[in-house]
Image 1 (cartoon, helix red, strand yellow):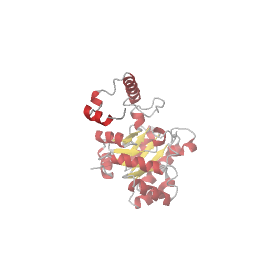
Image 2 (cartoon, one colour; image 1 turned 135 degrees about the vertical axis):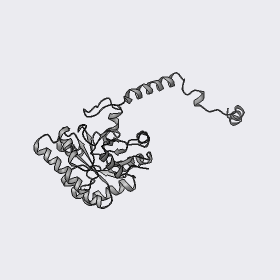
Image 3 (tube, helix red, strand yellow; image 1 turned 90 degrees about the vertical axis):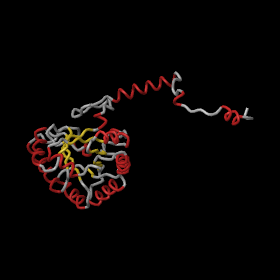
Length: 278
């Protein structure tokens, strides 16, 4: 049985840390699911980490629906949350249509969108329509061109107060959880203590109710990129390179495929099939 919003809220109530990972395909999602990860986020980080697009902005709704469906098919127990991609929730009508596709076609149990108080009418309308909404504050990748560069958000008193007000507004609008990205540890703790709903941090310190990591960072799949807020729990890039080299060598020396990797047929049947062909 899949995790529900009630399960996630109860984890906060019990003080049980909430782990969330991004997932983009059925196989990897199934492994995370089997390990017991309670929330899988089909992030628009798909653009950077899978599609080679360089940012989240070119990711389309079709992309998100396709990958969300794959993650949903590959899992049984995790709550699957899908990102609403760039400019798919600029209006109430757009937001309802995008959420409908992510849930009906993609099978998501919830959606995530970026932004603070300007998003309150969108969040409220989606919740009224029966769509669970996870908010996202702090550094929001879809606004990368506005920010200019990746940087911590909320360090000044004014910016910190605005983030806190945004968080309270999203909660009041019906959001069931809130991602805090690149927010100072003290501010993330202050927001967490004032919200009834769970906070999920990424680069926001250990006092959030949970943590999310981009799975390619966590697994060490990229040598070229290691953000400060990430920790590698494996070095899969090294293992994949070594496995690829071993495969190349085995093909070159004709040790693969071996007999156990091959099939055979009766020699008489082959002779009959080749008879008269020269």
